[in-house]
Image 1 (tube, rainbow, N blue to C red):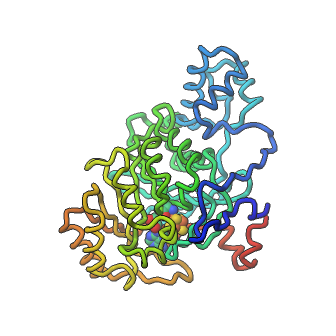
Image 2: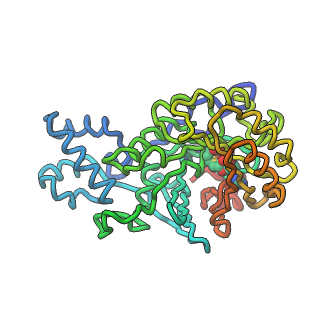
Image 3: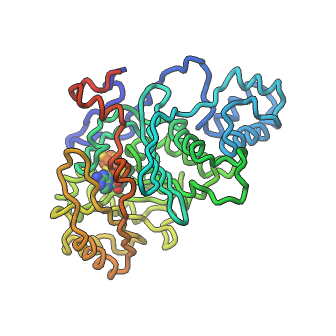
Amino acid sequence: MQISQGKIMSNNESGMPLIPHVKPIEKLRTSGKINIVGMPRKVLASELLTITPKPKSIKMRETQIWNWIYQKGAKSFDIMTNISKEYRENLKRKFSIERPTLTKKQISCDGTRKYLLRLHDGNEIEAVYIPEKNRGTLCISSQVGCTLNCSFCFTGTQKLVRNLKSEDIIGQILVVRDDLNEWPYNGMPKDRKRQISNIVMMGMGEPLYNYDSVRDALHIVMDNEGIALSKKRITLSTSGVVPEIEKTGHEIGCLLAISFHATTDEVRNNLVPINRKWNIEKLLNALRSYPSLSNSQRITFEYVMLKDVNDSDLDAKRLVKLIAGIPAKINLIPFNPWPGSPYQRSTKKRINSFAKIVNRAGYASPIRSPRGEDIMAACGQLKSESIKLKKNLFEDKKIFKT
Ligand code: SAH
Ligand code: SF4
């Protein structure tokens, strides 16, 4: 496989890629079957019609299958005992139920779990589970690598290999639920608190550069017959792909987080280069018209604290002026270093001073405590393990050959 198939080339004068541009690299499974995991309801319905052309029974079949896969964790059609044997045989001929393979799991001293998952075509991604007192958050990836070279982000140093498909995105949740033994069918009492209570699209990649697959996957997450998590428990983080923001609100309706990180275009151009295409003004205008924006559904502004780069009191004052009128919360993220990273974390004193100014202006300004640092699982530290290893062996251009 060659990276040239999936790599986005810059195609405008600002040097930023346009959207949406990357086709998933299709590789037929050796079984020749279609993976039913991640398949949108409508597609499943039309596929089922090819098995039995009885539209009346399709809704019932769909519900039964989804219930087994997303609520009971079924890995084979054989255990779907409320479906007749004959129908199961038909399903088996056409479909498979597949998830990524868990190839490595690391558990931090603070309980954070980092998972390395191999996809069916051999590519690898990371997902991180962060348990807290009152909730458990799963951070999932949307791409293998990223096209956007944010200068403080480790993922940004890994060139894009491919967009994830809906099955790869949902697959991350299924594998982690397997690992946490979170399937009611496996003996978990129904009233036990859910271990994965929240999902954040803050892993590898830019979710709004892979809009269709992310939307399809999140619809399954939100569906009461799917993973069944409320849209208020799902946060999608974007570096600021302006043309996709309104659509995200209308079609997905989840919470939105923005990787803001700077208060002038000059600094943001360097930190988050997508700013050269959609600058702070364009981004803020798009946010002001985000559907469903309200005090109960505020936008989270993520702000990485980089020593002497974006962390002055003046920055804090500029920030609150810029976002005036937007129901918002400011999440201050102490910079998480990675091998060779060009920045330093701001001091605690500096972060506190910044937080105070933001807070006095009426915005919640929680300081995110880095989780899983000892296993490189904190924000911005994710990168496919295989790439990390190969990086030492090959030159940049060659590492994407498998
Ligand atoms: N591509 C999306 C989502 C993934 S990044 C986005 O950029 O929003 C998730 C969050 O981690 C973003 O806010 C990102 O800016 C932040 N981040 C990246 N590298 C980081 C680092 N080294 N330290 C702290 N936060 C970082
Ligand atoms: Fe990509 Fe987000 Fe990292 Fe920027 S911060 S390089 S958009 S993953």
